[in-house]
Image (cartoon, rainbow, N blue to C red; front, side):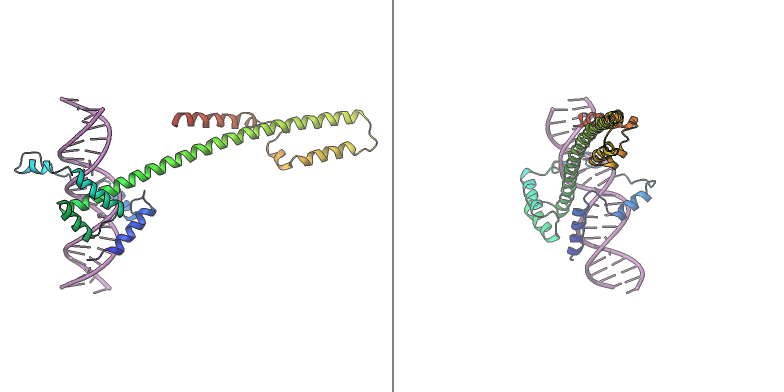
Length: 217
DNA sequence: CTTGTAACCCCGTTACATCA
DNA sequence: ATGATGTAACGGGGTTACAA
């Protein structure tokens, strides 16, 4: 019997979505959370005849594992022809080979998930640091802006005292200066108001980010 | 077209071996 | 002796191919 299309499909799906159980399976399991699972009866406890022999054969030899690993390295899926051949070669039941491949795929998937998690974590930490840096920069710029505003105020006051030849000159000077400062930026950070968020918000967030990183790195 | 079955898959769990 | 960890094996539920 040929199951290649299905196997290829499943391989494709599991490579695309290695973290996800098939949707239908998730639904089925969710729906059956109350159904009691059938417990497997204990065996090979030595109470029944022949059990101890089965115990001794349980662990695969290093040689067997090597060959299985080699095959797994070539291809994670196992067609029945290859399974039978391998089983013959290893002196194992084909069912054992199939089970080994299933378990190996599960281990491989877990490892991939761990790697992915680790990469995401690193990237998240880098983003937090960058956020922190940008917030610090914003604070600096706000300081500069506030200094500039004070300077404007000073100029305005001195302009009031010193009569100018052209009445609009100080104003045009101001507006010229203001043009160098992006108005939306100026407005967004409410330099006049200096709300609490400007002084404390980003800084504390930044501290939290750093503490967070120190905690988890 | 429908139904039953075999063979495969994955997921979660269990049982057992090994090691610190 | 024992708890933690790794892994072989299993049970259940899903899909697909195929025959009747």
